[in-house]
Image 1 (cartoon, rainbow, N blue to C red):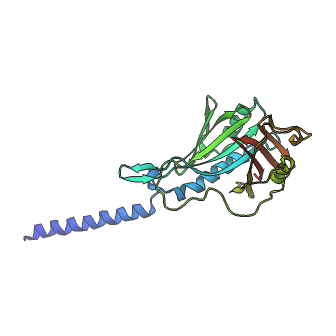
Image 2: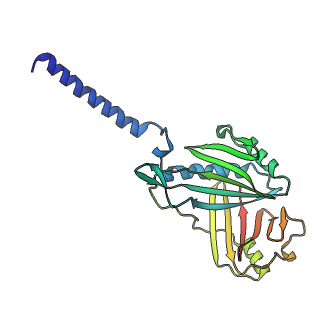
Image 3: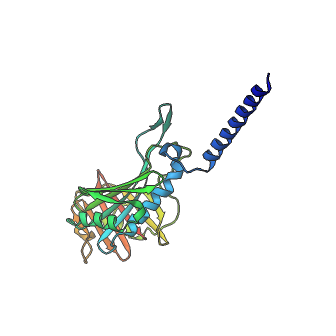
Length: 258
């Protein structure tokens, strides 16, 4: 092999080493450029932060919130043609006076930090929470606004717990169950951090059988934010309480924080 050919081989090998090193460095240090390069575990903190920011924009005197857990959407999705993934969303439900749903959506749009690039079109709120997490909100029913943060389809690296374990004040929810003469079949706790400190906590209880309609004894003397035969939302001090009939069960939530 001649000297020139040897130099060509050496240069080619050296260039290959440089390219491999740059590729490894980029993989380890550069931010992801597509959702498929990130995992569900990496997305969930952005989901929580987004809903915490949404909750902090609301007027506590005019609305009642209820936080849900992480809900898997479908059994699986495709990250690539050859690779399955998962998709999760988390929902913050906002109960408000009937007719003020649009005002709630406008308030969220205007008060979210600029980085969200929040917009509102035809009563549909859209925002970008970062890390390819999307936020969408809209009117679910009269007096009810639904805001969901969605991970999109990503690789699944660990099991996602839909509810948190921990302690929380059950008393407001228990008072509703006592008034209905029902015993909870299941208790769940949902939590996330508030942007200004503290924790948004929703305690949820399910009980059955449900009455045909919610009795008048549940209705607070000061009035309710939402007052319907199958749904009630009101404030008990600093706690937002909701009661709704779902199928043959009663679902009660008590929410504090943010």
